Length: 302
Ligand SMILES: C[S@@+](CC[C@H](N)C(=O)[O-])C[C@H]1O[C@@H](n2cnc3c(N)ncnc32)[C@H](O)[C@@H]1O
Image (cartoon, rainbow, N blue to C red; front, side, top):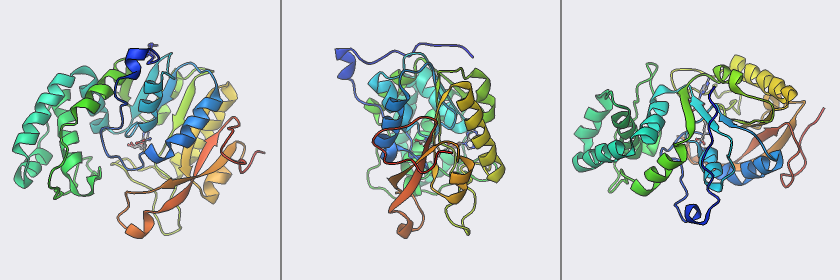
């Protein structure tokens, strides 16, 4: 995998630039867990390249890049091709994305929403604009796909949705300039990880109750077998000297899969849930292969 140097943002001028944040509302987005995640990254010390194989909305990556914490390259990937196309479109043709969004903004309405939902543009910039437009204007702002990988959330009735968030999209585009971005399963990212690199795994979560099902963010299910595989990968990377951070729900299964690592219980607020009674604070697990100060006592360390 090619090594790239991500521009650091330590200089004065760069610090005045807006802080980029996720341009999509993404299920499992990590904005509320950022303080705890940043403590973990700080505890990891100096690292080589940064890897995020379950990129989603990319909350941690954007914050780290903006803070100048990534200086030896970033490798971002996700299994969802629609999401990755959007990242590539924004990185490589921000003007095209903004122009396409202007068109969506002008023509926005229920019929237009469904026409865009049914469309399959080819250019990366148009693909990016399509997913941003749909995400900003759909019901609940929730990214949802059917079994064929097609976006299927219905129209949302917002009086004045922010469709073209130009300042943020430009900041996002800058931050992505020196990152490698690709559609891959997490297993296909492992060869490019070297000792001393930092990896953040944020997979679809283990269900918290017996009645809940394993999550399906897209047409690719992430079941018990994948959770086990990921835990094995975590351990083998840790053995190689890689600094590894993972998040997951705080369950008995999580504790047993990661029993030989540090497991911290942290509180997150879930805002996106179809049931309002499940939108409150929930315990989540932050798993590391190094001790993190300021997160309380780790649950287990064999
Ligand atoms: C919890 S979300 C990540 C959220 C992200 N950290 C954020 O801040 O928005 C999990 C992501 O894993 C991706 N995913 C699911 N199965 C995967 C697999 N086998 N390999 C790589 N990515 C996968 C999903 O498409 C989804 O974007």
